[in-house]
Amino acid sequence: MIDLAGNRTLGQYLYDCLKAEGITEIFGVPGDYNFSLLDTLEDYDGIEFINGRNELNAGYAADAYARVKGMSALITTFGVGEMSACNAIAGAYSENVPLIHIVGSPKSMMQQEKELAHHTLMDGDFDVFRKVYEHITSYTAILTPENAAREIPAAIRIAKEKKKPVYLVVAIDLVEKPLLSKSETSENVPKTNIDALQSAVKHIKGMLEHVNKAVLLVDVKTLRYNLQKPVMQLAERLNVPVASLMQGKSGFDESHPQYIGVYGGAFGSKDVTQTVEEADFIIAVGAVWSDVNTSKSTAKLNPLKMVEIQPDTLKVGEASYMNVRAEEILNALQDIGYRQNESVGNISFPYNTMGEDPSAPLEAASYYPRIQQMLKENDIVVTETGTFSYGMSQVRLPKGATYIAQGGWQSIGYATPAAFGACIADRNRRVLLFTGDGSIQLTAQEISSMLENGCKPIVFILNNNGYTIEKFLNVKVDIEKQKYNEIPEWDYTKLAEAFGQEAFTAKVETNGELDEAITNAQDMNADKLCLIEMVVKDQMDAPDYLQKMRQYLEKQEKLK
Image 1 (tube, helix red, strand yellow):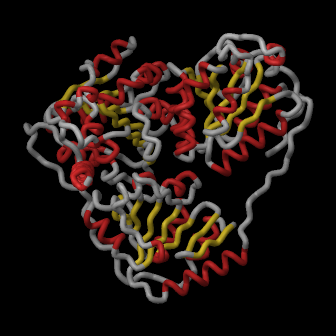
Image 2 (cartoon, rainbow, N blue to C red):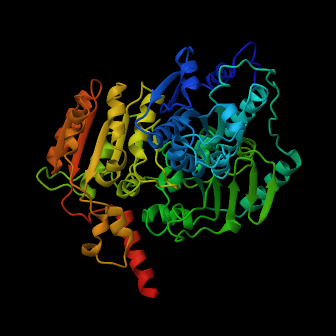
């Protein structure tokens, strides 16, 4: 960390450090304990405050911003504000997203005297909320003029290294105080254990002597640790097919001829499943073996045939090699002497073929191919938890596309504020939001934030009459009895009007109407936000992946 302290106040120094990391916007919501933070920011050159409609949504927006730019920051007030943001911060922790959460707290004297202040639990304990955050962040610190020059760089370094959120709290009366110490300039850069690296390469070389079919799997940490380039170089050198896991979608260029799709165990594409599970040798990069990525444990991957590369550890079969950085083993494997003779061949992706009947009602089999066809290079695609997340996982993305979804945390309502955050992170790229009628009702306020900030995403709202994903997952009770999965009917195309702004909107029920709406949205989205409501009459219409999952769950239920 460079020395930015100089004659700076605590607040100025904090923003200097964030600016040095490329953060040019900070999300949040004003509150009386963070006024000094916001006043300092108002006068600060180079970082803009982006006001969210509530702290939860601001946290979601910051999460997506970090996925696009590498790191983000969030400002909330003490107690009520930070507790509202808890879900977003926990999601960032689960999803390996580096986010700096800054909390403005009551005056230092109030805290020392344990006064009963508003926004507290009325027990004089001002440290209770930081203790909550100890469990959902990688680092917490109470900033003072004496320690800020040490604690702020330390927090940022940990967020960068661990790809996790961190928490900083500062009393309102200390933000404008001058620093009383200079910043530390040294950073501990993790180094690879050369002996472990060489031993691992020798081990892998021995395994490859008898391999005919190898495959490469990429997952979420490939994205978070920016390993895409060395992974692609390795794939090309080895000439092996590449699949992504569900949570790692877009971790490999999906337009690349070696990309075969998302591996989804028993629920995904049969061709992809066969290619992966019949391989003699698997290289998995940045994998998280969650129930989502293993498709309810239906994935059949032999760990004895696997090289599992994590950011700073390596596992080859049953052997573990510690302190081996991912970039170095990926580079070393390029010269290992193996190259697969068999080419990947022509891959048939699920949504390459599009139904042509314009009068036919919308269904998953017809609208996903249309979505795939409309995507452009470098798009940012934001997908909500639910039926969309399973269908969009099988859509082939164009070159340079960024895919944002909460594959692990799966908080309903995440995607709408996340799309807002993505718009702010890069105003030169097109953002497309795919969300459901149930999900958007949780966080629809951020449509207002998009409009207020001049964001122009193309928003698709899938109206399938309620929480369809929950209806699919609950196989114990008939759908008719699941009244709790029903939601009010909103007029989604009137949202922009309700927020006092203009947008292009369309409500479509057939293939032809969707085609026309997409054409219009493509023409208009440079000038205005575009919102397309897709009405699907069959509430149990869903992509093949989800249909297969339900069949599996039904079988499991009968076995009980």
